[in-house]
Image (cartoon, rainbow, N blue to C red; front, side):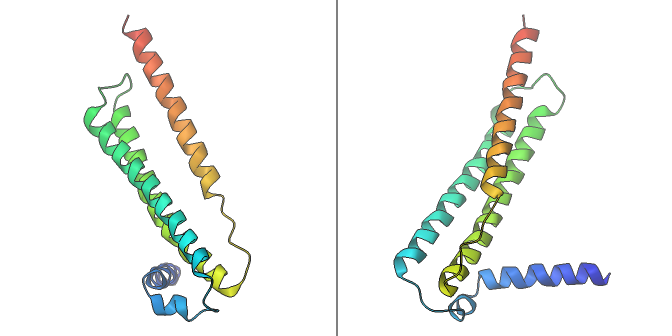
Length: 140
């Protein structure tokens, strides 16, 4: 299991860097505080998005009526909860990578995650429209 140990070590080191301000300050030079604050506001916006997805997952689990497909309500709830957690973890990783790039005067890190998230939310909405229409047509 040397591969698994290496992966665990990499994840542990990444998470440790997120929570160690000395690590962040040891890289590059202190940037204009406005850039760091803008990066923090973006991070907080991503956290709000993650929280909204988690809240949507809990609402789906508690308030959606049974849908035409077995366990569809639970699948929707779990998908929203997992997506919300993923957004939160991705937010802190992106914040740390962006802050590091700012301190080093490098190009900001590119990310496909916003596009992937938008597609996932759009697909989820489309699936919900289909489920609502199936229920409406089947209920007649």
